[in-house]
Amino acid sequence: MQRVAVFGASGPIGQAQVKELLKRGIDTVAITRNGSILSRPEFLGAEIRPADYFDPDSLTKALAGVESVFFQPPGLLSPTSWAQPAGNVCSAAVKAGVKRLILNSTQWAPDAGTLSGQPTYDATSAMEDLFASSGLELVVFRPVLYMENLLTLFWKPPIVEEGVYRYCHRPGMEANWICMDDVAQFMVAGLTRDELTGRRFTLGGPERLPIEEVVQVLSAVMGRPLKFEYMPPREFGHYIVKRLTADIGAERATSIMGNDPGGLAEFLHEFYEFNNYSPMRPFEVDMTKVLKIIPIELTTLRKWAGKQDWTSAYPKIRSGTRIL
Image 1 (cartoon, rainbow, N blue to C red):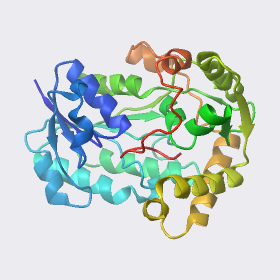
Image 2 (image 1 turned 60 degrees about the horizontal axis):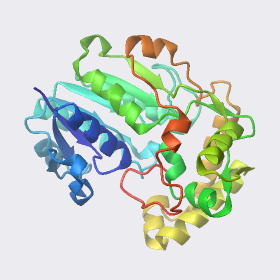
Image 3 (image 1 turned 90 degrees about the vertical axis):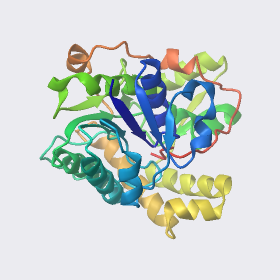
């Protein structure tokens, strides 16, 4: 039985992976500096090891005796800042004798060797290329849009408190939402199937839903009316900056945004303008071919939403929470 290390194990994405590995009886190392989050019964059996993305020696030490690695880039760093932590993990994995790395890019990216013209997505592709050149056996998964985004600070409070889904996806925009548990299943499949080595898979859920239908599904699950309020991307960017500062404090917000909150607002504007209007349609996925290669039962939005708590407005911000 191989030993698998999960980076960012205390974040929502990493937690789903740790639970899936343990459920399958796989020897699991949870790499995190916040091990207290993993004290719940569902994580019993995981070995917790601390490490710092910017301390190469701590990374190599954390990977001792590990055959395979699950890695997703740090969630509260901009994708354009992923190069150093990803490079350090890559070097540490090679030094520690890791054989295989399963990369969760956490978002869409253009095909290898091509550029989208969108800096965030092109930085993601560059990160994938870095791991591909390492000599590690690499399998890449690119989930385009997480259902769990609906539970984060910027979306859930208006949904619960105001009955409003406030977002900057243009009206009529379609997306294949996928849940973190399903992505974890794909990643586990990448551990033992040698024919997947070198492949990059874009992942989405079983339904391509326009934003208005997403609102209808949530409204039905919650049992009360919910309306969609479109915010233009630049306005949405400033809304995010204001909400972030008010809800987690100026000091922590500065650690995420830097000293240029207007820069974050402009970044979000540019990012979502691309998502809304690019002919590449980064949130749409045809899963037919993927499921023929890796057959799993994908979770619908309605089934996922029915398992969530829609009575509590404020989620706890944790390591690994994405703001995109």
